[in-house]
Image (tube, rainbow, N blue to C red):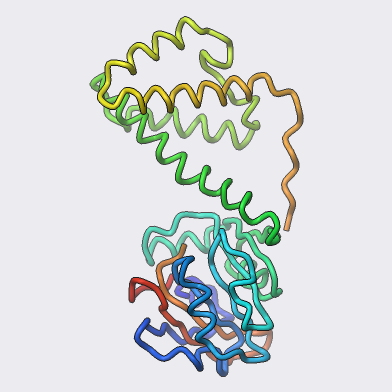
Length: 268
């Protein structure tokens, strides 16, 4: 909500906490945003009395529109960026990121108002989309964690590899993963791969380290041998809270926010 307030064109009325009554949260606003944890979205949506003209959006990447079933105008808006806290989140939401949108046109309108790129993802493809998002963020961070551990075994800090990681990521995004791939697995240098495995086998938790290394060698080898064109992409969580936002074209009506989850603060 701080991000929407900053870009203008929306009047944001704040947030309701989980102890607040939710029945009338959709009254007198154009948009109600449910920013609760995924497992709370359906419960909170069911507590809000539907209002004919109010769009209700959730911010989940994994859920479809069925969880908003009590409401006629329903949609989803999922930002493809980590939101670790309200301050960082508000800035990142306005940084030109992609948003997965579905359902009511208000979702795309909000994405564009934030300067973002809306990508249509329907319910049938939602799980695959969210798996890709989890790999892109969670798995990448876990892989960097392995870099940190293996680097430490060589007496080096993680930041010594920062330039390498950034350059490799930039290359993969600009050239495509296959063209950017380098290293022993890509060129079939199995003697070097085996020496890596021997070094990893001396580390604490070596079974996990070897399993992760072997899995990535397999993916690198697959990538290096895959001559098929990559499939084209179709064009098209915030802290716990529920936000209602006003701002239909020409409207200055207001909004409310509701927290329906485990935490009680922060709306980004």
